[in-house]
Image 1 (cartoon, rainbow, N blue to C red):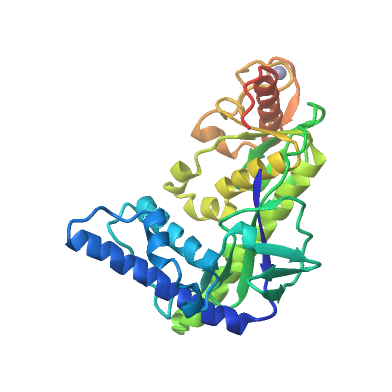
Image 2: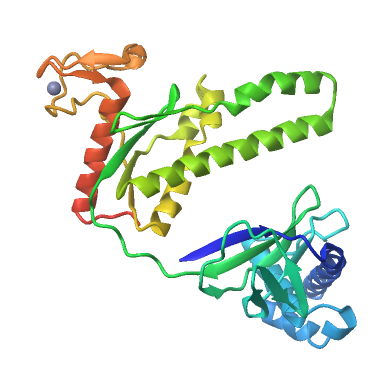
Length: 348
Ligand SMILES: [Zn+2]
């Protein structure tokens, strides 16, 4: 399994700024050669061709040859990905980027050795054992801070046996309701930030608006990361209902749906599950709210349609069990997920 670890760089950022400019120069050189190829009707240059064209320029440019290769290869790759004949030039306004070959980056205690320099980082979490792969890079964020992104190949942990599982019903009132009756409150950062945003927007303070948006996004990611990691630590298998957030977002519920970040949450659960040897499934939500989780019937008293949306609690007319609407749904989701896993159609 391939993971990316990200560390804030705390030394030699001046060197990185300088190298990033040279990287842009190499990138623009690739773009120029590509435009030449178009103009003269020549075959388009592959990463391999671009590598050949830039061979031997390392010393003159003051850039590690691995970096030049990585830029050339990424250029060819991006061109294919974006399906464009040529790409945008990198300018001084572009965020700094210094890609590298995985083999050129080495650990040195809590720092990293690259191209003859030792880069000290805020070693926020230990880098696991494993092979560092291509695609690793130094990259700058919007505020000008440098980060070292390390792509690392680590062994997958063994998959845990189907012990204790959890079903998750994602919702609007609570962010999520679990089959064990626990509830995760909706964070609603966006709503909280809204007042501050309105003030800033009226005053035309664009930087402030940007900062508020950035903070909200960070808080949301932090919330989703924490909740998802708690779940993969606590359970052996996880089943989530596959609500179509995109569809709901078009209704009047838009703002809270976007705020809730269900799809991001599911993605996080899916990859964290692999990391922890947990099995993860998404199951259809159809009738999970309406089926009685005790007797499995679709009783007459079930919450139905639009009219049933507001019903929080209901009693099964067949077996007399009193259900919390969301917990009942979560239990049904867990049951469906477990059935899927036991049938061997594991979605890993
Ligand atoms: Zn029942």
